[in-house]
Amino acid sequence: MSISQQRPWSGDFVADQLDVAIHSDPQSAVAVQDLVGLALRRNPKRAHLLVSAVLAKHVPTEPALVMAAGELLGAFVASELALMPDDGGHPRTLPATGESSLTTAAAQLSAVLQGSPGKRHSAIAAFAETVAGLRTVVTDAVVLGYAETATGLGRLVANSLGAYYLHSTRHATPSVVPVAGFEEGHSHATSHALVPTDPHWLDGNGPVILVDDELSTGSTVINTIRELHALVPHAVYVIAALIDLRSSSDRARFDALATELDCKIAVTALGKGRVELAPDILPRAAELIQRLQPPASVSPVPAANPKPAGRLSVLELSSEDLTPVRSDRFGNISPPNAADIDVIAKALSHLVGTHKCQGPLVVLGCEENMFLPLAVANTLASLLPAGDVRFSTTTRSPIVALDQSGYAIAGALSFASHDLTHDGPGIRFAYNLNGTGQRPGTIVVFPEPGTSREDVLTGSTTPDRPGAGLQPLGLALAGIADDVVLVLLPVDTPVRGNQPANIHSSIPSSIDTEVTP
Image (cartoon, rainbow, N blue to C red; front, side, top):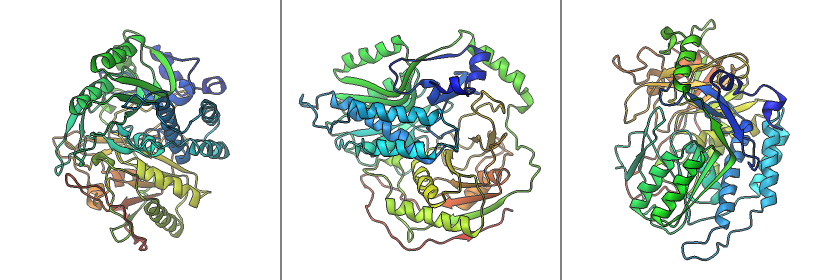
């Protein structure tokens, strides 16, 4: 039974208004409707947005659920690889993931998603325990995640396989020259770059795993495989997504590409199905958005705030406290050290307790910076069992907020960007932090490591750029929560050819507090 049969589905409004029909494949491991809801994009190329229930990009979600769902996708990849020969034509000697184990884990995930948030902790714990037993080491694999939405998901898949990981980026990287780039046609920000610092990152003979949150047409993946194959040809490519909604003609394009490149291309997903869209969906969506929110409100402006601004605190850690953080956009052979995650989580737990911060507590990553704050949120949830800890991230994507049942985005917060990106300053967003029943008591926000407090408190818009006049991230968040904690971490800015050091320090962390100006 899917969510839509138990209570209003968070895609009902868009489905009804725009005649969007999502059909889950009977053989799908998890029903597509359980995995996603629907919202309206502000994008002339794509009317609707599939809002994931397990990605925590747009919906604050229990961190343990996000981590286990991502690692389950990694187990699906391992199962797919077990069916393929290696580069020499020999059967792979992977531990048997076991079809029954995958089926059990998928059923547990379905049960979690059909439950009510806040009342499914034990079900999530059981699901996570099952998934932990499915980890399979594939050391010769290279895992590539897509910015910005799937950077954390790709890291989770890489963790489950014990594999090297790199994600694409839209950030400016002055110290590293891109080795490849590709376009994502329907995205709000289309250009991706690959900036690995290891010149031999793709030289092995193992499988290349491409990870995204959804496959709609697969065009971005096809562009990527062509780019990668031109750099170093590989025999096996596996595409892993939370949901696969490609049409039969799109699937045929993958088969044709495999024949053209003389390689194997496999696709695996937690949910499989298809989507039906009315031929006039784009003009209908534009009319609907205009009717719901007149043109004067299309350009986001700071919402009126009847409450005084919340308290703003800063937790600033240095290289004496933990290993400087190297972004996965540069390629990493392993995730951040568990000991460093513990240092950050314990420092936060101490600050929250000392300041008597109230829940619910949302840990908020920023755009591509998803996995490290997710891991901290997961540890923090165990340190603050009564704190109702959730995880989410900011995004570039402009989405219509509609505070009503049957819609996936109840509230939208807009603010000025602060990161250095190729396309310059602009508007950024955080969703489902305001709106009916959405308001967190405390928000813990993780800007990109190396970000200064001035960046987060002033933003980077200019008078002639989108977002001019909006508040910076720190002040915008302080307008919707009682407490906001900015976590500033040291950064490892790499140079080409260097790999991350495997060291860490356990020197106690430092904390200082500021009052919002």
